[in-house]
Length: 510
Image (cartoon, rainbow, N blue to C red; front, top):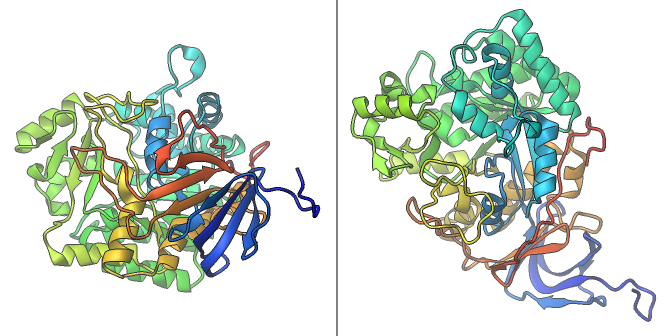
């Protein structure tokens, strides 16, 4: 449809909002229009539109991009929509086989854009322990890579040294994943401390040749030497320096523990020297994983500066009483989700260290969102509202709103423009070299994808707690590919406009 003056009539026009677009440097009142899933107007004029929404007093910004989300289900992603997220990528853990997971997500539909890396851990489990890769034709629902990992992380061989032949097969599986659309390699070194450093170096070489990102959970989580968190970060930095690969250090806040200042200085120096190293963090002093993780072995807890009672087992809600109970839970349910108070929220020194991780120059905000667990099972996949008894780490629901409330509004640590940059344009720029679709995201100028969040800067806040999975508040409108997922603060029933994000090396990559 065109207006009488020949201009196209927009599908939707937001008027009077404060546009915060770090990619263009704009922070001021603008009207933003959408047509056919694309941003078609940004300016002070008001072109004709079928629908006009007055958002005076609200912020309009590019939708947030989460590089670290394991919450890859309609329910998990809708919770992230209320946190301002429009694209959620599972890059740290990833998946295999990649084509199967993309097909399953496309078939089921997703409210947000989604994508995966190729999973190093699952590839190792397949090669070294004979764990079959999940496939839809084996009957029943397709297992996610996280389910495969959690069920098999105590396998006899996968976490140790691999032979040259095994390494070659693992790397070939990862490369196959990239050709099927994987956005890079996801590497859980922290869960496989016995794997070889030369294997990681060869993996980085392969990633550099393919032009994709390596997202790594660092090998060490320790405040003390030898084998401290600094050592773990230096392994990632060394791989970047030695190969030229783009290396992403996941959740630097939780893996660095109380060595964050040394890790930060190492990262910044590496960046100044031209190494392609990036970081992410989430604004919580509590982390989460399967209780069988290698770094939660009772004899290693002192290295993290914690004790068994700092671990909460979600299936029962219990604080782990002692080492005997921890042994019992790790044996009976190694994949059981737990929460870990890895630093002390009551200690101002720990809180300030967390702030430094979040405000590290160039660091992005990423949630490490976890699936919902009900009765110890990952079976909350497509229910809304969230059913009673379903639990997860609050970061899965509130990371981005908490950042805006805590760091911007309450503490004034960073500006609104900088916060949005860390949530949108910077993560898009990290992915843009290998994923063509990301070049149209993380910005709100003409021609960009209409992935849009509108929020109240005075009201946006996280509400989720350990025992209450309450969605964040303050997101008023959220569009994905120009389609509403949230309207006037409420979810649009059945909205599934999410599109796959694939690497440029995939056939039909988008």
